[in-house]
Image (cartoon, rainbow, N blue to C red):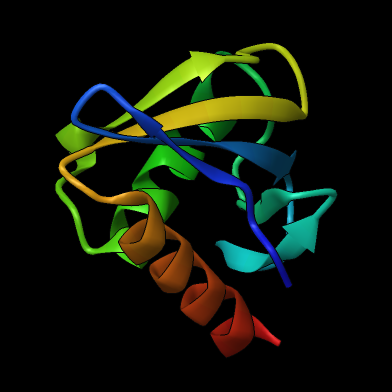
Length: 102
């Protein structure tokens, strides 16, 4: 599993493949270099996006305010930025979270 995490102004950014209306919320794996995130909320009114950011903050061990949606608000493919983490540390945490879901 290889998640493409890139340095970005004091933090990192990476791609996310969203799966709204899932049975359980969590990091569930990797897809084409992106982290796959499932959330129970529907993709309506930004509810799924908010849940994705909250799920990622928990998986990465950072405050919810440190995680931001950069692009893809209306798409299942998104780019997320996280402040205060290095690329290697973020990749390690995301991969550990994905392994825990399998």
